[in-house]
Amino acid sequence: MGDVYTPTDEDLEFALRHCKRTSAAFLGLLIQLKTTQRLGRFVPLGEIPKVIIAHIKNQCRFRVTLNDLQTYYTSGSKDRHVKLVRRHLNIKAYDTIKTSELAQVWAQDAATTKEALPDIINVTLEYLVKERYELPAYSVLERICQAARAEVNTRYYDRLCGFLTDESRQRINDILRASTGLSGFGWSTLKSEPKRLTPRNIHAYIQYLEWLTSLQTLLPTDLGLPPVKHQQFIDEAKALDYAELVKLKLNKRLALVIVLIRHQYARTLDNAADIFIKLLLKMDRSAQKLLEKYLSDHQKQTDHLISVLSGTVRVYLDKPESVTAFDPVLGKNSDQLLHMCEQYMAFAGNNYLPFMVQLYKKQRSTLFRTIEILNLTSATEDKDLLNAFQFILKHKQRRTEFLSIQNDPNDSSAGTIINIRWVRENWWKLVTGKSTKSAHVTEVNKMCFELCV
Image (tube, rainbow, N blue to C red; front, side):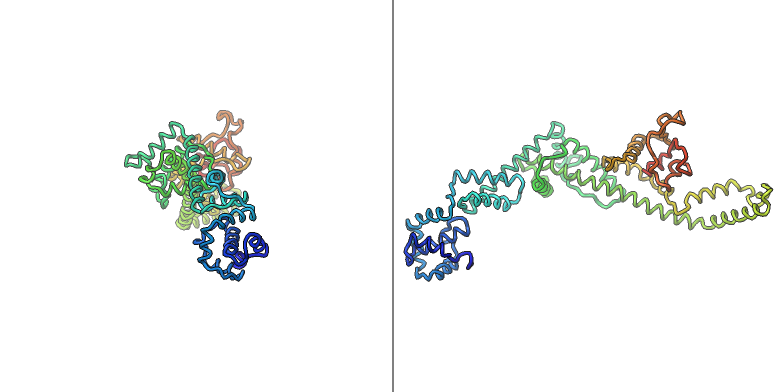
């Protein structure tokens, strides 16, 4: 307080030019000067803390009483000194008409990008100080800024409603009608959050995602809202129940529904991706466990296969000139043994992918519904994987074990529709049926290729 309210030599010199040092007017002028320097406006005596009055009085060694000061504040001298202080501090009086109009303009400018009332007030105050205006009472400024915020928000509501076509307006009205108890998705549904990923919950949530996807196609991608306003409208919409929503003015009601649809749709893209990833990870873990069980259950079969193989090698080494020498080892079960060997080799090197294919059949529909919501695009110039994805989407309804990837299925030398060289080694044989990547591929296993993609 000492630094702020202690009169400087310049302050004392200014007061001495207009008053006698021992007069109440001298102290009154100094008090008006120091408080206006600090607050930017003239303050009634009753609003000034006594400790500030006492501090200025002690600094100047005055014997003026509080009654003397009260007499000064009701005199004409006080009003004359107001003009002197304004001139000394180079500030302009606050005009209730002209200055208020300027303050309204500044407040509206601030309200276009800010929502919190204190932020709008602070910006308006900065303009008033910069333009050297005396500050009005806080209540006046608060009222101006509240009105400015309301007007700016109303303009945003009107602009958002201007995006609506007859069809989209009808869809929003359907949402509000559904909230009254009719069948369908309503206002409370729009604000729902994903539940634990049980099969039933996943199915219900995907229905919700598909509904939101159909809604957002009726709205523009960019709503033209500053980030602060956008978040404020979202928070306000989330906080309203149906009864509170219908009490709002029509344009505000529609605007909040629009903003919440866009926000929820953006979030559902993340949720759809999460569901898709979790389903695949669950399949991955289940397939690994099935492989472990398979290897454990077939340990005896494996031992037998190794025994047959070792016997075969011994016979070959002892009697390589006679093919019939293999008969005692292979016997009549040679075809079955070959099948067992091929089956075992399919899982060699801890390859659990064949088990994933079995699990995929149960989740296929859910995975397709989820990933179609995402509307994938390529993050790089390499479009091979995206082209493969479009290929499986195109043929997802076909009931066939294999899909041709040739431009002309009847011409074995024809080029391919898609490039599949990105397929990894552990998927290659499952997808193509070929052992090496150098082999010519004309078709792919439909289920394996879908899961690989």
